[in-house]
Image (tube, rainbow, N blue to C red; front, side, top):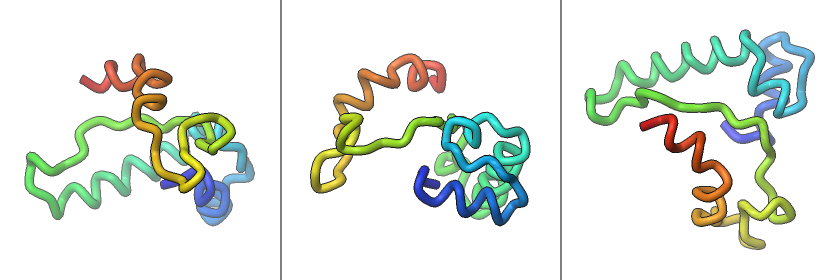
Length: 90
C-alpha cells in the first residue's frame, strides 16, 4: 500500500488518523494489514510468502530523494536511508 492510498483506506476502516507517520503506528491499521498479508499468503507457495515486513511512516517523494522525477525508485538512496530497517528484516 502506498502512502497516497493509506489515508483513504484508513478512513474506510474507521480510523481518523490520516498522517502516514501516525498510520504506520496505529494498532488497528497494523492488524488489518497483518490480516490481509495472511490472506494473500494462503494462495502462495511457502517460498513466495511474505514472512516479515515493516510499515514506514514516511512519504517518498522526489523532494525527499527516494523517487526520480519519473517516479522511479532511487534504490541506492532507499538502501542507505533504510539500512537499519532492511537489516532488521534479515
